[in-house]
Image (cartoon, rainbow, N blue to C red; front, side):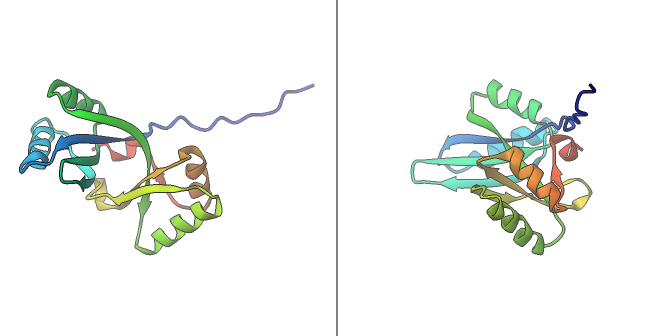
Length: 153
């Protein structure tokens, strides 16, 4: 009896998002941007949430290993999580993305746009409750889910 032919999903390098926690002071964002730029790390997607006491800067970079090392060396308080990144050709793709996720009953925690990507294409960073299922659903709907290698320059 022959065994079932099982095709494994190709191994992808997940997109990593950093969340830096800092006091809400003038110049904090500039310090972070300058630090990363000085070391050749480019911020591709960015979102910031302010309160009166602190700020959370969420961002995706082209080289997450280097960014992680810099944040640790400089003593930044940060966390790192996997998110998905979806390439978008136009604003109409947002409708297709959200419809596919609702159909699959996958909750969106938050999303934010890419500032820029290689070759000038747009994208959305999305925090979800199930990245693997969302990736499968979006790919089946003809949407391109990016991995970290797609973001490297």
